[in-house]
Amino acid sequence: MSLRVRLLLITTALLVAGLGLIGTVVSDRLEHYQLDRLDTQLGSLTKLISNVSPGGPRRPGPTAGTDVLDTALDLIGAPYLVYLDTDGAIVGGLLSSRLDRASLPPEARLRAVPTDGTGVFLPAADGSERWRVVAARTAGWNGTVVAAAPMAEADATVAQLRTTSLAGGAVLLVVLTALGWVALGRGLRPLRRIEHTAAAIAGGDLTRRVPGLAAPTTEIGRLAGSLNTMLGQLERAFADRAESEARMRAFVSDVSHELRTPLFVIKGSTDLHRMGALAEPADVDEAMRRIDREATRLTRLTEDLLLLAQLDDAPEGQLDRAPMDLRTLATDARHDLHALDPSRPVELTGPGGAGAPGPAPVDADESRLRQVVANLVGNAVAHTPPGTAVRVGVGTVDGRAVLEVADRGPGMTAEQAERVFDRFYRTDRARTRAGGANAGLGLAIARSLARAHGGDVELETAVGEGACFRLTLPRPASG
Image (spheres, rainbow, N blue to C red):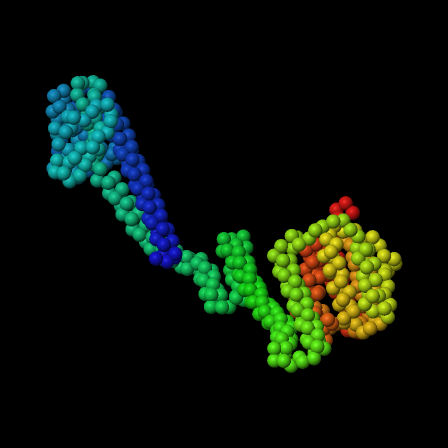
């Protein structure tokens, strides 16, 4: 069964139980009230009569009666009065003319009625109804007075109440069940909206979200909010997976391309030697130089890829930290630039080119940071014309150690700057690779090493305004 049907059955069952309990309690209390009223009337009457008849009953005859007598008996609530002697025989009494003698309590049962004023039930002689009977000892003579009233009217009242309660409860149950069906349908409508949203997402539409179906403080509102949060995470996870797969495909393609060229050179040289095409010693020496150059390139590419994989897996495990100052690396970078291109003007300044170099203490792996700075210096030399000025800045900015390598070269576009740290990315793929070793991994390695230290490598550039690569690292806690 659906949730709507189950809820409706549960509420209907509870409603039936509640209505039945209320009807039972009300009818029971009414019946007790009727009995208490009759017992009070009959008890009071028997006490009164037992005290006002000192000489015993006069014998008007049980059949004697007039309209006045009937009215009087109805008024006092005891249509049947009986006097019993010491032997239990009826010696007198009053009877309403409206009563049939066959419907009276049996005389033998009247003798068994307790005389302490307790009300008891006696059946009619013909079994048509029941009577409420109260007896009391007389005060002036040795006898008993018994007052009885039929329960027909009281029973009819209780029966009518039960019938009315049953009919009213049935109508109320039908009405409330219909209203409950409609209310549950409206109440469960948000769940159907959620179901439709889930079905759309299962069909591939990851952009779908559960609409605002209720206030955030309600259960439906909180459920919708939680589902939307989960759906957002799922959409990001699928997008990240797709992006990761795209990066992996590009990575495999780039690695294949980078490995293919040196392998072709090596294989081509060995094929020439095997076919005897390298007849002269000079040709053999040149082929061996090409093989050595390409083998060195393959070795460096393999080492770079291994380092990147290690940094991705456990970056902290690749570091051997010790206290140091970035000014040492900045000074060495200046000497390296002069050695690579003596025609370049190289300036050593503070961060941003303002003032003299400042202290930049860090707790880092010096050899790894030298690798970062070497990549930044090599990038500046490779991507700017000879003689282009380069500035090396070092110091502390906003509590972080900073080392900058800024050139006045052609700069990069925004698209190039966004992708320059990607693996195997080169701004000019047609550019001749210096030494045959540039695979577009230098800046990717530099950023990975910087982030392994808790820092980063940032780039500021624009076309025609040069490029500034900035290494930032956290200072030691005691620094």
